[in-house]
Length: 225
Image (cartoon, rainbow, N blue to C red; front, top):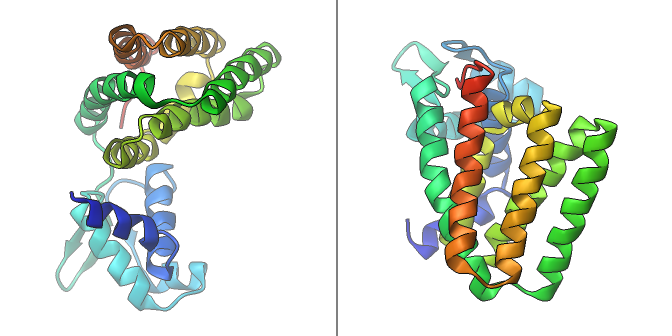
């Protein structure tokens, strides 16, 4: 993917086609549609208040992402994310998150450091109150801030996409009080390494953070798909 593709993707998300695509993808990844369920252009168009054309274009794009299978003369069906797909995403993400943290050490601003410190503080507060939705939202903000701090459009784009793909399983794992607390401690350690501009340590901790998530999923016996 080149810079043009990234810029085009960023602008597309605000277009009608982009909004329809993002909504259908979100519904697939959140589990609204079951595996192999047919995605009817007419019904989705009525639900979203659009014609069949942007829905059809969105489904074709989702087929390229592997989330939908289009069978000629039959229709479009949900492929979704398999157990192996999800596992692969977490493994790949563990290395990219590490690289992102390393690069953040070189480019992060004081404003971004202050924002990360506030996120860690607020997460600790909400974890004590068992405020699940706020914890998930703050977890998103922590990672997104580091993505931005890396100053890499490519890494930001890829990792943000991965976050969408694993949103359902992330909500489940962070619902565990112990994982929410431990995850925030890991965030705090990553932040300290970034503040110290220790790229090697930040990379190691960020990689370990995602690997701990995989272990937590396995320990809870959760299905990744």
